Image (tube, rainbow, N blue to C red; front, side, top):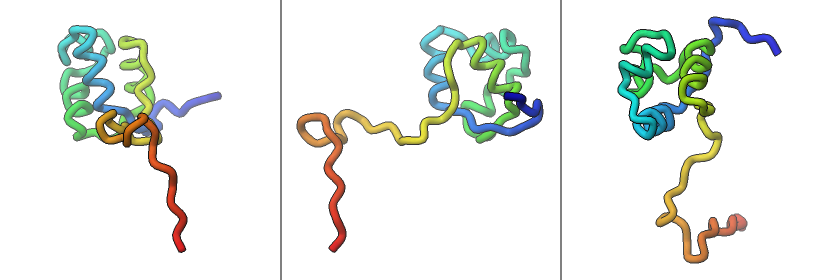
Length: 94
């Protein structure tokens, strides 16, 4: 599958920050390893950039070795689930 270099894609800023911190990387060191300006990483994490060029996303994914594609489903905190850990059954409208 061929990608256009300048195609814009969404990126999961929360996951990017969490993985960067887990790996004990600063924004500057991550940017340097990915070959991009520090301001790019900073703007992605602070969600100034909601989408980035695919080449930027791929560079960050290569350094961190994770997929930064946003999940289609929102994350649910364990405390938000009813007892038993299951999501409530959908209700039928009458």
